[in-house]
Image 1 (cartoon, rainbow, N blue to C red):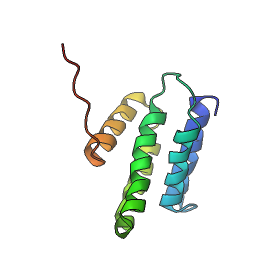
Image 2: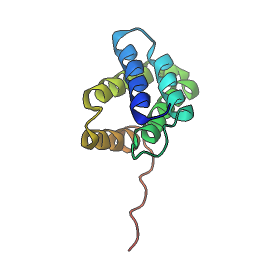
Image 3: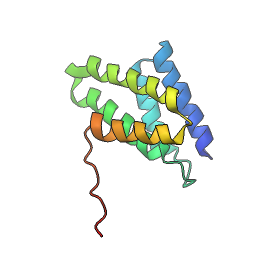
Length: 116
């Protein structure tokens, strides 16, 4: 991908496929994670790529590492896709989405505040 808009359009398509039933949540989630892994659009100031990589990587790992919890993980994938499609493009809303999903929902450790 040459730019973040192409990356975002591809993510939107996969998120929509989750919601409209054209793809299984796991398969579409794996595609989103893969896009973020291999199609990095470059450093154009768009933080969506790395944040979506963390979110969708954790969600697909959940299925792979705890297959008995696939239904729960896929429910979260559906929620994450629905929320993303609702807020995508509003950078302030995206920042809140990333913060909540990465730290509150998925449990990544928040970085320590910079020391002064």
